[in-house]
Amino acid sequence: MMNKEEYKLYIDNVIRRVEFARVRFNEKHIVKIVAISKYSTANEIKALYEIGQRAFGENKVQDLRAKSSELEDLPLEWHFVGNLQKNKINNLLDINPALFHALDSIELAHELQKKLEAREMTLEALLQINSAKEESKHGVMPEDAVAIFNKIKKECPNIYLKGVMSIGAHSDDKVVIKKSFETTYGIYKQLESATICSMGMSGDFELAIECGSNMLRLGSIMFDK
Image (cartoon, rainbow, N blue to C red):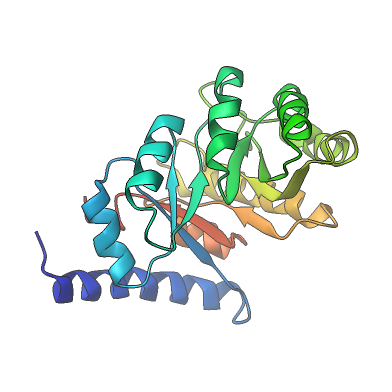
């Protein structure tokens, strides 16, 4: 296990890689890192907080509840990045995350809208796009994404759609991965009100930034796992 100084140097190197990729895309481009803490303990989250990280993401509602409760004394910004089952909607809304990354269908949007309206709440969310059209992934098809985004905005006023999210193609071929990122970014650019294009994880974040991502979901690399 690294001591605090070694860990800070390690994270500084990750940030440096983000910076180089950001400048290659556009020197005015701003990129936000959400540290995905699903395999990390509260103490590991605290260690990363102490060197400057503020946004953390979980992919299970029960883990989000447990960790956000255990670390409630820290000013952390919690994101929910997992796929949401309809029977867990109320549990998620009890926690009230800063951003829900994986709104993957119009049906889920309508269910969320009903529950949000009943609670007189709003929820910020990203529309998940299955940009590589992979059966193993959730999300709307790229050709339907703009229409679904606008439909949710119109029919679900309690959901504040901030932009889009996608996971890079499951491939060793950089060209294929890049194409999936470019597909998502192309959709993002068509959405007038969108401000977030969330693409890129520990293995492909530099490529994602170079394709226009402004929000990364980094897990293993942020916790040196």
